Length: 184
Length: 184
Image 1 (cartoon, rainbow over the protein chains, first blue to last red):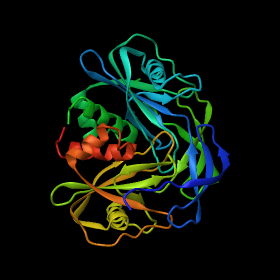
Image 2 (image 1 turned 180 degrees about the horizontal axis):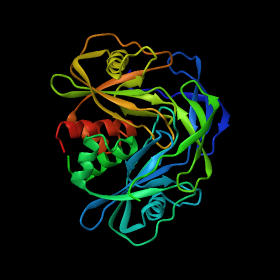
Image 3 (image 1 turned 45 degrees about the vertical axis):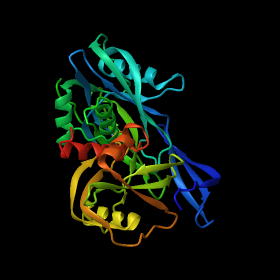
Image 4 (image 1 turned 180 degrees about the vertical axis):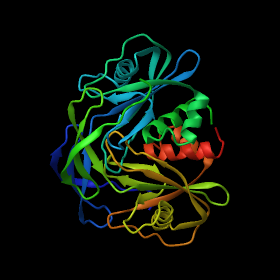
């Protein structure tokens, strides 16, 4: 066999609503054995991460307290797509502005990746914005507090290599950026 | 202010057990406002991903149906740390063998990253194994079915650039590998 066959879902049930995600239980038939198995899946809106560059090619990073890991993490800006958002680029531009006050030009979609295809249904879009400058006051959500940091691309690479940037979605975005820039 | 202060958790409650993850609700005090907020967090065991290289520097990838995204994904092998596992390298060697039949030498920890520090508590460890060869039969878990694929490092990079490898934890592992190899 040289292809992986899909599983067919026979029924689904809601198992919980936890504000930033919902839990769904899917009952599916194995294409190998014909037997039924069940799987728990998280439903979330799509997420957006932003690679924002200044005219001198420094990257806009943010430091914030993360409530999953319970640590301060150094990351690129980002957020959750609203129901009203027409596309991920709009979300990325808004989140960059709200979290850092930076605004740029030629915002565009660099990649769409899967945060965790084993158990989450959504995607994470990576938006690239160039010629960014500090043009606005920040506008944090309730309970949000971020510090903005600027690093050269070489410094960002060193921070990733040394494990100071360690959010998988941020590292994946930096990898897609490096590939797009032909840095590797 | 040039540092991000931590939040103190005042109480926690279990909100659900879904086999591969549990949901916890943490009540915390904002260090900025002193007000209480609550956050939903997933508890999972740590995960392990494996970069396995053959003597001619091809990478061992796997294709499998993913129940979160409901798609076939091309990824590096990996799995969940068992309670009995002493360390992530042991998990990585076992998962590589069970999922692909490959076994190698000098297995070692390349990086430990955070799958999603905003909402998941765990880490994902990246294990590097060299001189891998097909030495065993595969031993899939119930409901598991994977196809093994070998690609050169240049082909893996192309697959990532073209969006055919799109699991964020896999892309993050490939980035850390590229950084360790001084490929960028």
